[in-house]
Length: 294
Image 1 (cartoon, rainbow, N blue to C red):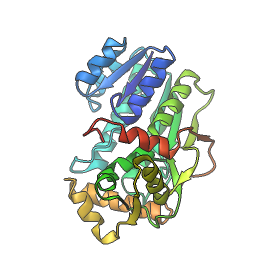
Image 2: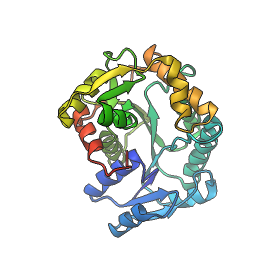
Image 3: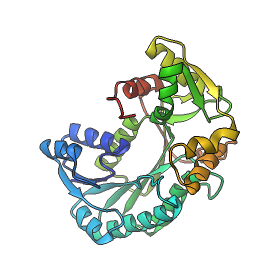
Image 4: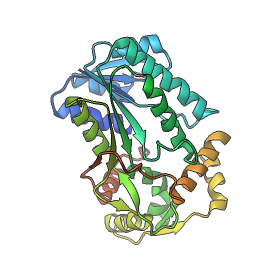
């Protein structure tokens, strides 16, 4: 049986589907018992409601697992996402040690080896540092930028044919990966645990630029979509407009600076895995989601 934190989120859902398709027993660790959780229960999964900061209850939820997927869902609305992340990371690791889970797959990020200059990716740097206290076999999966993050820019593309981008310049390609491929990669790691600790750098089948994303959307929508550069002067207002607190606003600005000045890149000396889902396919899936699910 495999335990999955963030089981109803993007990567957790993809992992649940991959493991279910492989006829594996799964235990979903969720924040609330809602309709999605009930649907998984009807499919034969265990569902446990647990707060990731409650170490004792989290350890109980992990007990008996052959392996676990541990990630820290980003707390963008918290007054200090970095402090919150440190607390959650410690709880995840302490609980896994208490439960004696033999193998952990931890979701990390491109750029997580850098101790500064990466904005909110610094939360995954902290995670990797704290994972040194883990007693289990460890797989760290450093994922490229999610293709699905383009969901944040779909509205202007649909309404005005404009795809605003904070990745600059807009013709520069960067590593991107679909959450579907993250789910598949984690499932493979859980079902075939490594002999030794490992770090895997997960890319998509190719690197993509904002111009590539606009071109793919043009083909999918049957109309012209143009990528446009969002000037740095408006970045803080973009994130304030989403209701984020000041620490999160600055973290996002710093992250995009990090991508643009190439502080945020893969370390390059770890095994590389490439997914199969191309950007057009990932965007097509986004467009087919029910309204409001972007």
